[in-house]
Image (cartoon, rainbow, N blue to C red; front, side, top):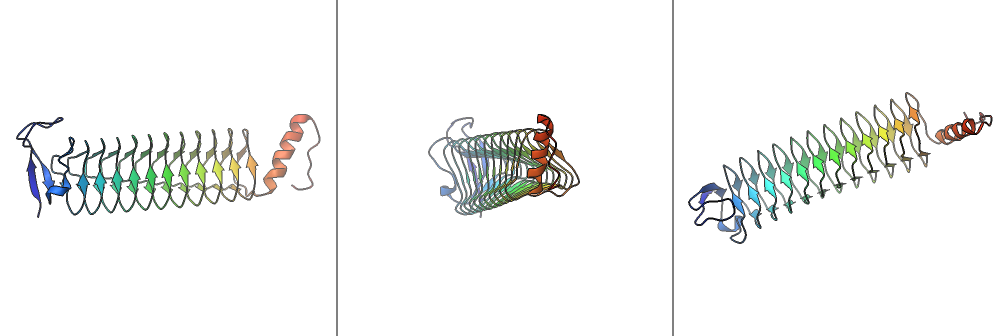
Length: 265
């Protein structure tokens, strides 16, 4: 059974006598700080709201979840499991944060996004749309994960990187800098996409590959193994692995005026 709360004194932005949301038991809402449950929000189970955190509108915080610091959970958002929402984080709209996930810093999770597993969303990261961040993945800096993108495994998306569309980033892959992974692209294994690089279309970057600089990987291109790609190299509708090393070598040969080596092409 849930009980509607009422402020006995004024504190923070809450006035004495103001009606709040619903809790199951006293331990759901800390009496220390300016924590509050407002609107039609519900907090029950062993969930707890503390610090100066606010849960409002139609949001639900359940199970063993904790909302603390100056965090806010609003809209129709749901926080459950052992999830922690802390610092200045915002969980809004129809977003869901569950299991052992942690959202902190000034990070925001909105739309229909789901964050679960042991995922970490920190700093000024944004996760929204129908995005899905799971397992041990981490999103930080000013990174954005949106659309129908999925980031999972031990993948890291950080700095000003963007993962969107139907893109997948997984394994131990890292996307950072101002890099963009979009459309149906996949980045996996121990691959790194960095700086201003763009991976799109149906392209895949895997293995120990490194794609950085102003590189664009597109179409059905495949970059794998230990390939390193830098500068403005655009690839479309081909399958490349170690052969890319030769292509890069020939590109440098043309720039230096030497005859390209065609033996491995």
